[in-house]
Image (cartoon, rainbow, N blue to C red; front, top):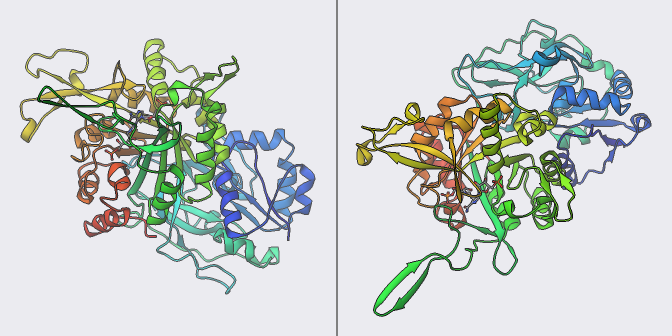
Length: 548
Ligand code: 1PR
């Protein structure tokens, strides 16, 4: 059987290739337009922007052969953009270019999620796909109502039982109060393995008119609150790449010295070593982490494209981990020591090719927003803009490293007056704002966390990772004031980070803020709390989690 995969040149296809390999299926990449004729089954995966995908298919001469392949009725499995290109048009970037035409196999348009029900866009995370019709034959896979799939997208085809789309839809998913089509088409959804194994059916069978099935929104959607395990990675003093963990960003062991009857404890010992990155990532995946994150915390010192060990870590982890993998650190325009320049887009592309699903941008995002506020308009050239244009905004996370700046609430009249947080309980009488830093907290910048959050959302970031230098490694719980401040300033999803010390801290952050995800490092690395225990506690408190 000729199973072929179509890569239009920008989407992240490494995770799919890894999944197929893991399942033991052989496949061939479509390398030229002639290959379509050899395919018995075709998978078109891809995270990316609709226009970029259509333009690339056209310029590579793949559009017409793809159209012919679909017209022939042979099985097709479209994932993300691969499914969206089947539609008549997409409104993605319509404000710049007008609607972008698709292949028109399905007579409906792809539009942006509404935010009238106050949900974050992109829709990101593990949500349920509900079958509209019962299995037709034993060859149809039972997708089960309790199984969650990972979604990352801002555009969708709204489900309407009475439109032509009603006949095409196979499963629907609810996000906020919107119900959209999460799989469709003549072949219907199969889980990858079953789809590849399933016998090829006569093409006409699936085109028969289907009965109208209403799917009104329920009170609550099935989107799970995500639990993310994060590994801060750097080379230790012996040159080995290790997972480390700081206290308020200081990753070196404390050293105690005694002299003249005086005991002094100060930092400056060896870099803490909490394990090997790939082994830990595999462990967290098997324990049920919804996402895995690697932060290359000293990459600002060198060119990441020369940082082959980090690329190798991502490659090896992507073979073990089948949940989204984010890689951060050094995603920026760089120049190699030999003078060769690389754009942030190239650096990100290198990580995507190795199997990363998202990149996270830290220091560079701060400089980009400073420039945006200075010049008043985007340049179109920043990493956030170029990467989100090519791979979709959902692939671009901005990691924020803020620090509290305390001020006198009775006299403060500075520029961050509107953003001041006033302390409660033990902090009654205090007030502070949150200042952005770069280079892992080593340098403070004249920018507040609210300015940064709004600025990067404008530039096209799809998600924010909110660390806290004050809480990092303290186990005191997430800084809910910080998360609420940022969450209220933007409409993209937010990951709360820094300070988790127990299972209940996850409940606190999900009940006390609208964060879509929460990330922890130290408690997982030290084995103090397991991911399973976190999810169990969340479930007891009526929070939706992904079951594994
Ligand atoms: O600036 O684009 O090169 O990205 C560098 C990245 O490295 C940024 O995302 C920045 O947050 C991160 N980083 C830099 N230095 C450090 C450090 O610790 N010295 N780590 C660092 C950030 C915060 C989280 C940590 C949580 C949870 N660490 O990654 O995992 O605070 O910890 P906890 O659960 O133990 O409290 P660029």
